[in-house]
Picture 1 (cartoon, rainbow, N blue to C red):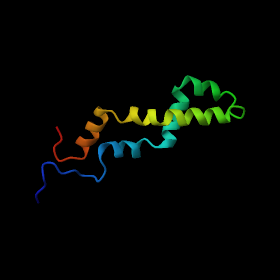
Picture 2: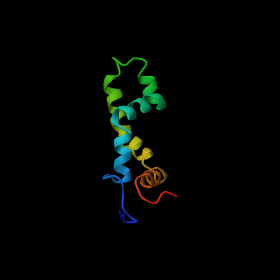
Picture 3: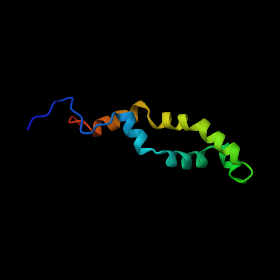
Picture 4: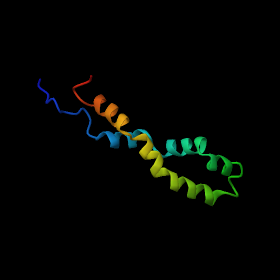
Length: 85
């Protein structure tokens, strides 16, 4: 059996894998745990439903970017390649 040195074990590129692993539900839980503004809004969720939704939408792109830095992509890439250092 032969394998190309540059061959990958998966079909997704590293950023795609990170997006699949850190799903929207997990991102929302993390936001509500770490963001001071969301923590304050969560004290009365019924009254702040619109503000919570707006803040979540504002933070979603940021949380995906934070989860896909070069180090995470490199780690993911190494997990799915034939050359593991």
